[in-house]
Amino acid sequence: YRFIRPWIGDGLLTSKGSKWFRNRRLLTPAFHYKVLKPYSEIFNKNSLVMVDKFKKVCGQSVEVHTHVGLMTLDTMLQCAMSTNTNCQHVTDHPYLMAVKEVGDLLMERSRQPFHFFDWMYNLSANGIRNKVVVKVLHDHTEKVNKEQDFEVNQILPVFNVIYTQYTCHSLGSYNYSLLAHNHTFVQIIAERKEVLAKAVNDEEKDSEMEGFQTIKGKVLDFLDILLQSKVYGKGLTDIEIRDEVDTFLFEGHDTTSSGIAWALYHLAKYPEFQTKCRDELTEVLGDRKYVEWNDLPKLEYLTKFIKESLRLKPPVYIMGRQLEEPLKITEKSSGRVSTIPVGTNVSTSIFMLHRHENFWDNPTVFDPERFTKENIAKRPAFAYVPFSAGSRNCIGQNFAMNEMKICLAQVIRNLRLYIDGDSPVPKMLPRIILQSESGIFIRLE
Ligand code: HEM
Image (cartoon, rainbow, N blue to C red):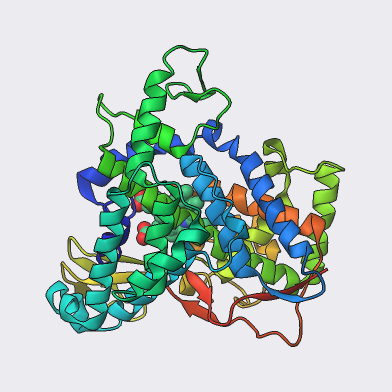
């Protein structure tokens, strides 16, 4: 995770020790059900924007992952900072292109042992590109002029010309898309502090969540929580808040986007399960257009379907750690003990675990019934860990499951999904998050 730090800073995913412990406690209220509950409306609205786009291309084979990525980004920006960018209507969104670019650079670096040394990487072509990009990106994010209010589409071509001189097209665009929107983190934090401080009396502030307030009529977002969260009277600094928001933006949109896109593929591939999900939705929702908070626990079949999809295509398919103490491993058959020394980088493959024959019969067969209560009870608890487990498990897992359920429900209710024989079969591509090399194509009717 060291390689990702220049981008997402020292947020919850990358920090460790006492800093991580303190910040995990400070961030936990952001995922309380009272905070997550109002997000259902955002999930519904944004999913329906995506569904409307799909309706316009009915009958054609569509690459859905890009559209889903825009939807989850839209959602994350609204839930994290109440920022409305209308980004679902942009093609080739600079932020998404930048995420892909950074991911590619990171994977290239992780395959070249010499580039593990910072000084050697910094001298390489990719290292220079990465460094310039990240520096330019951060510098300009912080130096932004408050008065500017450009339309992204007007300003990008100008800056792209300048930025392709130094670096990749998309990161230049990303930097200036932030500038153009006048939505830098530093600015947003300063503005929000001002607004919260001005709204001094209870009539102007409002929230269902005890100890946290926001402006009346506005959803209590992650930023409100991060600004007001305190442990022993001490909160997060502005830079820490920026790192956490950066972490949420990345962890919170790319992962769910991968999870939803692969689930759409599985719905198209297995029409019998698609029908079962649709029948359940009709039974639970009746004629209602929106999936409400109280509906979510009732969508049992859809939940089993999503879990099975995350088993075979886990968005976070591998986790890395550096050993802080020696690790003893005993080989079961021979009893031989091996010790892995301190400092070794080790990885746990969630992908392999989810397909391990010791825990799963016919592991490659897609079967949502693996997730009935009885079948779950037959397996060791740690055989299925799409959100990891233990103290460093995914803090956003309820957010993610709610978003996935609502988004898939809206697609299933409004459209039928098919696999088009002429489209490429998705081929898994291990990037920071699991992707498909050829995109994910589905025909929608
Ligand atoms: C399908 C969606 C998601 C999946 C599969 C997923 C999976 C994971 C996994 C496996 C980890 C552990 C990584 C490690 O220890 O190396 C993790 C950590 C984390 N996730 Fe998620 N995640 C998802 C969605 C989200 C969302 C929506 C958010 C935020 C809104 C989020 C925020 C985080 C954070 C901050 C951590 C670090 C937690 C810590 O170390 O204390 N994730 N996630």
